[in-house]
Length: 101
Image (cartoon, rainbow, N blue to C red; front, side):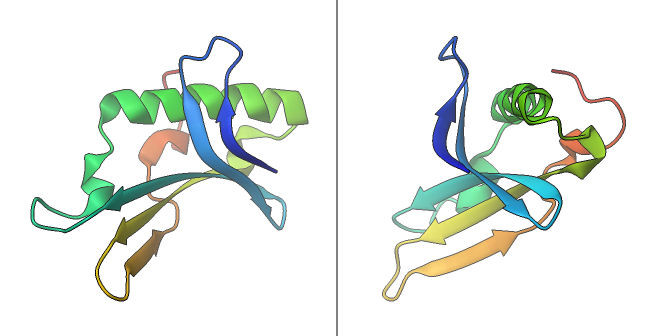
């Protein structure tokens, strides 16, 4: 549906927004040259999570999607040869209950 989607305020960005069946998926992609300082997916802090929730709420409203049909995934990429790519489905707890946005 969208890549590098930003709110009109420019304060937050979602890397990928896609549909999987009737689920609206917001995907955060984290890439690192090496895993020396931990896996890339560990780089998602509370601020980024809150920004993703804010984008998701706005996009879900705009598309008429119920909040229980929203999911947050993370893709971690380490630039080894060949690259190591991991996909974490439902990786962020933002959709449980009423998330702060």
